[in-house]
Image (tube, rainbow, N blue to C red):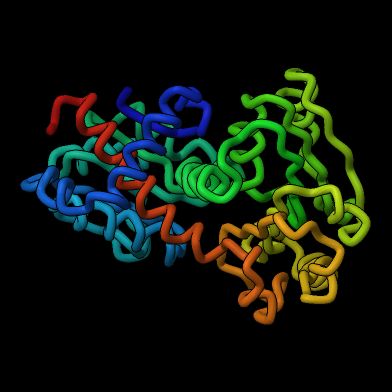
Length: 307
């Protein structure tokens, strides 16, 4: 394997291997502190990011490697019109592995097709965000003890939410999974995801606009923000941005063992008062993301024969 563009590039066995590596990193950090010495990660971020970029960089540093970064497309040759393909070929001369975030769907795939080193998709437009999903999976694994027999509520922007699309793809491969899709009509899950993933695999799901009514049946509630950057019309964004706000009052409808997740950043869709609820796991997700990115970097570099 020389790329992870979509979460389905990792089969359940490989996900389990990454999880076990991440758990070993958590338990024995010193064992991994020098394994990537002399190796370089190139982070190519054509779109703003805090957690994803910094967690990739922290992951490589904690593995003993180095990072070279492009964090503003306006200061790169992309501003001069250089293609993603040429950028990939160029960066392959400098680094051992690439993590790329880009606003256009398919950009990570083009990068992987043209790079001579491993490539990890750090988010491409509204398509998918596989490493966020690995963070989500480790969080679910650690909090719920596994992936089978869960009812997962996905709330907010299900149309453009690449983290939602990736998580559905990942969780649909486990036993007795159900989804509750909670969104305004305008931000419903795309029909192709329902058809190609849920219906194709006979995964039960229901669609609703009512968060409070859905909450008592959920094992996991995955909140998302309404993303201003995905809208062409500011009026539509302003009308929909506060569709769902999770508050301590609404948490009273949830089970005692339900967990709340969010890929972050949040705007106001989760009240800060929920942060102290023991069921709030979104900052645990952040840390779990670093460990899973460490595991994924190790996996790809080993399989490419670079460590």
